[in-house]
Image 1 (cartoon, rainbow, N blue to C red):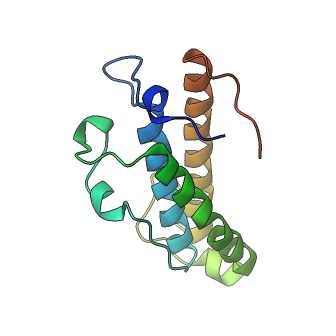
Image 2 (cartoon, rainbow, N blue to C red; image 1 turned 135 degrees about the horizontal axis):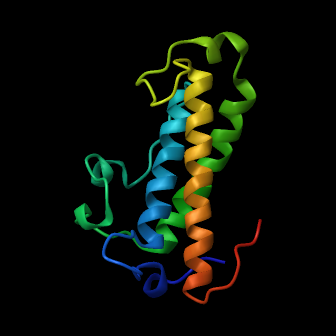
Image 3 (cartoon, rainbow, N blue to C red; image 1 turned 90 degrees about the horizontal axis):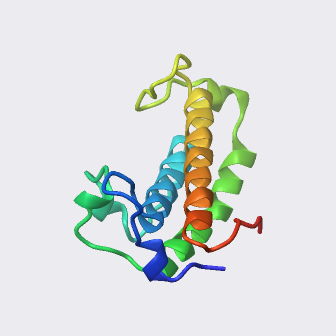
Length: 138
């Protein structure tokens, strides 16, 4: 179930991003992950997120429904790229380099998957805090 925009945009503190921004950021990181794996992936939000690091910096605000739709539009592309990955493609040097010891694409993939997991945990906690109940797996 897609949360509606009102609770998804509620911030529980001045220095805490809202659920909509976190989902938007995590979805964009999925786009980046597909590209790290050699795929092509675009979303309608890439330009608006180019230099944004927090919800405060975001000028435009896409709807939660559009973020949700973009997330699931990336899913089959990500699955195809993961299935096509080879030991040789994963051993290449990652560009850009991630803040981890492993400089390879595999290291970058591991970092981005952990990054997504981190943000999904944030979303789960915020959902419960806002009275939306626990997250459910698809």
